[in-house]
Length: 449
Image 1 (tube, rainbow, N blue to C red):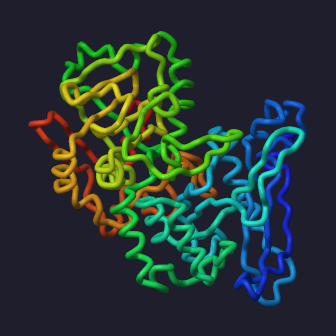
Image 2 (image 1 turned 180 degrees about the vertical axis):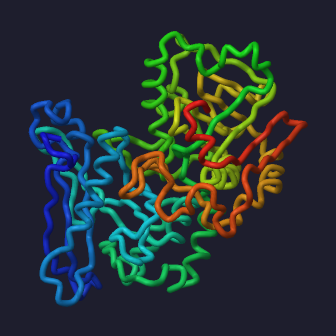
Image 3 (image 1 turned 45 degrees about the vertical axis):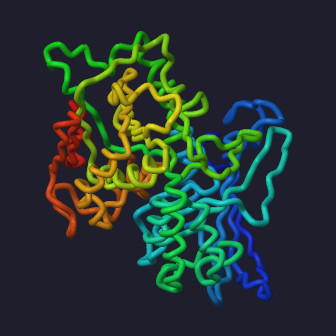
């Protein structure tokens, strides 16, 4: 940030002896410097006072198991941290404990099964108050694909607690072992039962993702289309408001919407049965004085396969638990929010279930219709490869690739990955005047879309 290409000023690396008596192995401990405000002179971060967050309010840490005979720490974790920090600086989205990062590639570029990340509080590094604000330390925890899926379908904090109970998978300090060849569910099948019970009881904490998606108003003839996504008085102001308003809900795993914030940091609370789109979440996306709300008769939703694969999770894990779920387009200003009848503050109603507020579409689905959609969309849940990533949610550019390109580990464009259905694929509910299309990525990459 100060003349160099890397967002972090530096990454410190320490040898930690662990505690054999507590089942904590010797490991390398990495700590970033640069996401928080190191200088207080407004060169990198705006100084907002000592009581608020310092810079982005956090630094990253990582604990990597030390291999026998290893005399110096590997440097690849520093590059990984630079990549995450680059995302934070470019998007201005921050991380919270319990978040997940879908990486789709071994973290060390080997053949390891550790290909994704969860984030949690560092067990040794407590929050500190500096002259430039408060800093917390979020530890990166490497996980397998199956563990990531459980975090998506349930919540990150729950999966982290399971990892702490398995020494090989992390133990009390959640130390990443890149040579781990089994998931926690393969090591202890009973852990899958705990996840399944948690999903049934709690639903999912994944309240939104940034994704390749779009929507069309089928109730308006094309020649009469003023475009409900362009009726704002100030496009740039709308774009900025949409970004700031939705970033709360577009993280891969979030605390409940009614979570408490202290010093700019979010602490988890037990999820409420009655969800809200109040001023702390998506209702603040676009000011009412700038855009009028329109009721629509018929809508067409469009998703790429990765995003479409999250629709069953949205319906089963969120709406059936009285919550909402938001898709925020990564290729434009559009957003699609599914809401249940129990969500407060929504501008979509049972009488008018499809409503648009500028580029933001809300769709209210009754429990009966959700059950019907789950039956009809059953094939979306079958290809395991299609479970979507975040945001950073699937919002993060994949390693060594610019954002917007196909994630590492996926088939090249034009080739159909094994086990996935042929695109395009359409679902329609004429009686509800709703249509959903699953389309190839290239449709969303086109500037004319």
